[in-house]
Every structure is written in structure tokens, then in C-alpha cells.
Length: 498
Image (cartoon, rainbow, N blue to C red; front, side, top):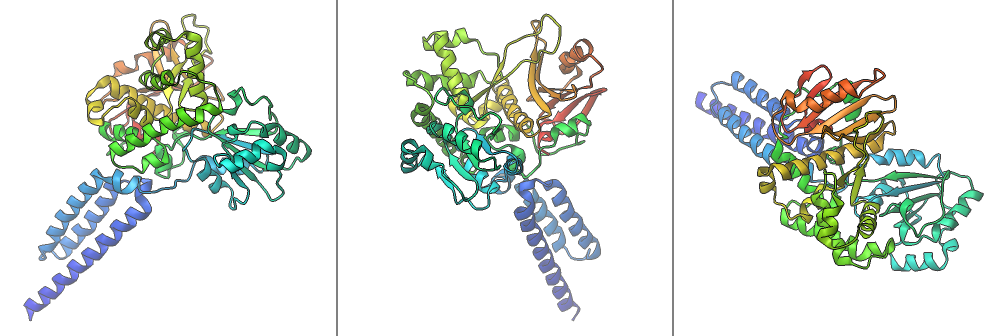
């Protein structure tokens, strides 16, 4: 009888453990993994439950087996979480969605611009519940209609009209201007474009005073994980997490190789993802380019994409590029400006609010997506991890993309960089509207020393004036926040999104 009872109790415990672990694991996977509530904390919770069961039913050896099984499950899930958790969602809530929705209540026209495939159509669906008047100029019929009868094309009395790829039909802009000048109602047009229409020579009419321009970048890690952009507000309060586990150099580089284009993010196989990135580049150069510029030497432009990627996070030497391509500086400038207007690359301006005569005045150059950057250079993650120059360049570009997206979300912040003629350099300077400065340097390694802050100490002591607050941080691949002096911190890179 006692033997049968023991078997019965053992079966009940095994069944209870199995149901509890399975239910909790899948709840975590479905509802929390994309938000990255720490897998460590989640697994610890389950371990505590099983330990409690063990101490309660210590005569049941099966609980020991369950503890071992859960530990192995935790390690497996921790290693492969990027495959089964973070990147399992096809559509992500964009940070800009709420802002666009609010702006449509006050502005007659809103223009959302960003590179092709960044998710502008998805954003439109998130902003407008019923897209009855959605017209894509990628549709040849719609494009012909827009070019032949622009006035009839934009006629709308049902709500907000969404016109996708507006740069393909510049004739629509003056017609939209006439309509919104007569009718002052807000929210009449939501225009999206894969090029910066403010820089396009084909668009001469300005919508100044009638329009709000919004930049949509590739996905940030924060958007993928469902986090709100809060790094700057926390950094100015010196509110950094004490420890963030699981985001070492290898993991960050793998994040960078994925990039932020939604379709590419969902592709787990690195070779297939590289094919997607290269197809994307070819589409931009062979199809979209003709809408905004007259480029005669397509091969040179294709070579330039890779060359510019290799200069990401650096100060470009144009003479070296002109020599490599055998083109003059004027042509090179026009090619670079074209790629910048298509949001493939971006310049970060120097911070010049100082009377220090040796301050540098050159802009710094960055690729706008690390996945495209790595694929265009033919890099391999394992090789990049072992190469300090490549890993430093890739991770700094990755950090730029995270910072720039958060700057776009709050207009009281502006992004600069600093370098003087004595090569004292701060990778990024965030200036708040009250003059407070946040200096950010990027280090790919897992350790930081006080000597790594020397440029920031000098800047704080010699450049910062008028008692403006200055906080200096180094983001690195370690897992702990380490104070090195008052207002000087080494912070895990993952603090940018957690």
C-alpha cells in the first residue's frame, strides 16, 4: 500500500512540475520574450519553485532530475533566444506611430520619409485605422494616374489620404499645396517617401508651414523588443542599470549583422540575409535611383556603396575615394549626396559651440544600417569578432543608429560629435535644449580603464562652460555599470534599449 502511494505521489509531482514548467515557459515565450524580461530572472523563478518542491518532497529524486532538465532548458533558451524569441515577430510597433497620429491632429500634411523597406506602410496602418485612401506610386497604374492627372489623383473627401513613394510624382506637391491652402483641416495627407524630398531637385515647391517631416529609420533593438526610448532621460539622471547579463561582444555583433530592416531581421540564416541585403542595394541603385538623380556611371556608384561602408564611423578622406574610383571631387560629392538623400548613409555634424581655436569642423560619416554595411563589405561575424578594427567600426555604427533613432523621438536632444586638431575625440555628443551635454564613447571590448576617459575629462575641464552639466559615458560590451569619477561611467551597450 505504501509503495502504491509513493508511486501515486511521485506521478502527481512529475505531472505538476511538467504542467507548471511548460505553461510558464510558453507564457514567457509568447508574452515576454520579445520584451526581454531577463531570461535569467525567469529561470531563477522556476528554479526557486522547484527547489521549494524539493525541500517539500525531498524523498522524490525525480525533482532533482527536473532541476537539471530546467537548467539545461534555461541555457539552451538563453543561447538561442535571438532565434526563438526576439526576432519571431513579423510586425513591430514603431516608436513614431503615436507621434504621427498626434501630429495628424494639428498639421494638414505629414511626410514620413526613410529608406525603402523600413516599414513606412506598416507605420501608416498603425497610425490610421482604416486605410481607404491608400495609393502607392509603386503601382504603375497609380503612377500613370498621378502623372497624367495630379489634381484628380489627390481629390479626397473621406479622411486622410496616404500616398506612398511621393518622390516618384513631384507634380503632386504643388497640387497638394493648393488643396491644403484652401482647406485648413488637419490630417488631410500622409505622404511617405524613400528619399528626402527636401533635397530633391525635381521638387521645387515648398510645403513650409503646412507640413511636418518625420524620419523613419530601420528598426532599433528597442522597437524589436517592445521597449520605449528612454536612454537619454535616464542617462542625464545617471540612472544606469547595475548589471545587464547576456549582451556580450558576440551577441551585439550578431545584432548588428541583422540590421534593422524588418524583412532582414526575420531571416535567421546569415547567407540568406546577405542575399536580401545585396538585393536591396541593387534595387535601390537600379530602380529607385532614377527617380531622384541622373547617374551615368552606375558601376562607380555601386562600388561607392561598399567604399562608403568601409568609412562608416570615420572622417572620410575624399582624395582617397576619388583616386580609387578615378572620378573628380564634384562628381563624388554629388554621388555621396544622392546616397545620403536616399538614407543609405548619414553625416553627423561637429559640435562647434566653443571658442577653442583647434576644434575640428569635419562631419563624421555613418552607414544607416549595420546589416547593409556588413553585407556590402562581405564580412563574417566570426572574423569581425576577432578583428578589433572591424568590430569597433561595426559596433560604433550600431550605437549611432540606436542613438539617432532616440534623438528623432525627442526634439529637445541633438546629436553631434567632437574632434579637435590634437585628435582628442568624443564619438557622440548629445546636447539637450538647456545646454546640458552627454558625451558618449564606444568601446567594443569587455573592459574599460580610466585612461579611456581622458578625452572626456579634458573636454569637461576645458570646454564645458557656463556651469552646464556634463556626463561622460563609455558604452562597452561588459555587463556592469562602473563609475570612474563623478559623472563618468562605463555602461553596458544594452543600456541603450533596456
